[in-house]
Image (cartoon, rainbow, N blue to C red; front, side):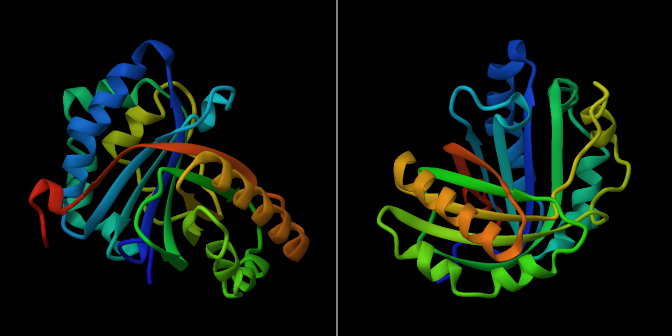
Length: 234
């Protein structure tokens, strides 16, 4: 019972200048996700928005699931990154503190997509303890909680997919360089309350086991789309 549609994931956190948020949401739903899901190997995309009061750098969470991490350095995908549309150029130039990481899925279990999702971000020079934790039975404990639909562990790659592209140039045009994460845990649930409880309980557990404290952020899912939705099945 796997939750994610593949063994690769591209995770993104960030914000957009306030006056362009409506345009950003329409662009991401109407152009960007359909464009990405048409690339061979992409399986599912999603966007979530954080509750009021969340720092701008983490207001939005975007994730693409793929067959494997190598999809994110494939020739068809790089061709898209180097040929951004006018709408894409305009929106990427409005990004605030972008964070973009290609990850390998190291553990996951789930029953579809939840209405709320929590992310636990980690930065560490050595992720050995996080790998050990990810290989434990933590997912079973999380999945046993009321209101929880899924959980997953992602290991980030600081180098993969970080080559200079046209999109990267626009995304960093405000002076904020792309950031990466070394590891991330995701928890999905029906509603905010059970997702929040599970996420903070998991944060305390992983910190006790590894000594590493994550940044926890909640997101309400705004849009989820698959490759089938855009007529791409390859």
